[in-house]
Length: 327
Image 1 (cartoon, rainbow, N blue to C red):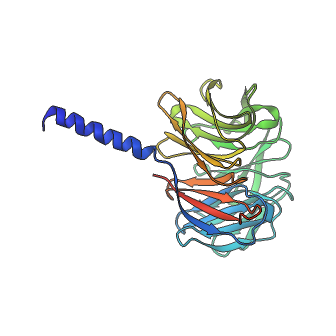
Image 2: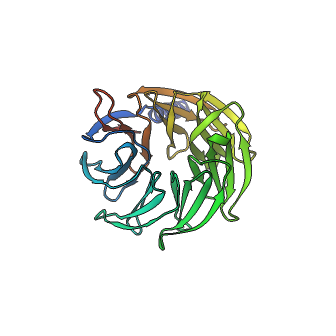
Image 3: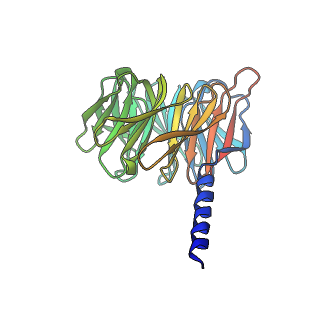
């Protein structure tokens, strides 16, 4: 092939690939949730059964939805302000943190029958799972990250924090946990091997840091701040702020795609923000997709190839899930 033709073909391919990767999420499906009231919190996904599990905090239920069939399958009831949620495929367990009664409950992934619970976790919130160590991490109380063994369903240890933790992220290739502590205006860094805080990263004028996303290969920790509404990037090697960018208001969930080059942020102001993350860590908002007021809880799963947004019942807007395809 002529060298210039080859270069032109490669350029066209690169351009097409760039356009595809920058294509915005597109609404492809809406799943009604009749009778569900109040706001949503966190979500989990089981790719083997196409089930999405949303903590309907205001409704005191977990809503189980078959995304492939586009219908609700079941509601787990009797909960008390359900917040964090996990699906563990090995033991086929659904794990739900309850903020009001301070329990972490375990449900059978097939029958939805309760299989056990742990108490004493006041204001239980976010949950994360480390498959390497087979440990669940839970944020709770006036300031703690607890460690749970899902096999014995017991709390093994806790690491104290200055205030209540919000979102946190576990390193896959290291021992650290990065924890948003908005009431202390900082990110706390825990060494989970040592079980102690090893670093505190103050955020200065950036406040109300609730969601976060870790881009481990780029040494970036991305924080969604509400006051002011900014996306803030910290260098995970130094703890220093690398950059920040304007974003929509009332951000609550953030997810990085499988390539590590894009971030999706669901914002209660009524928008999904899409950011490109370049190799230097520069953040560029490429799309702002209008949604609905209060729709700030979402889930992105690479195996699903979609971003799922939970829309609460407000006025004439009924509760529903909106499924956005992601290229």
